[in-house]
Length: 75
Image (tube, rainbow, N blue to C red; front, side):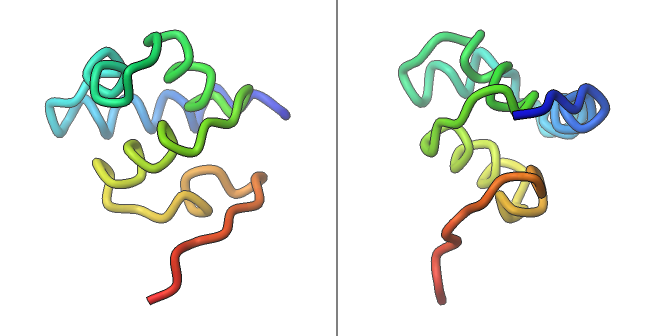
């Protein structure tokens, strides 16, 4: 997986604008904040972390990480 620092920074800024920090997501999921950072950067995959970030930003995972393949929930 490739690291897209600009995309990661954009995700981080958008979350911060909503008052959400990576540590908040880590607490919600029950993982280390470093995992949230790696997922945001595209270095790791973790469906629960991706889901929580997607939900907080109200944006599809495929839009946040276009280089990854996701099975989006069908409505």
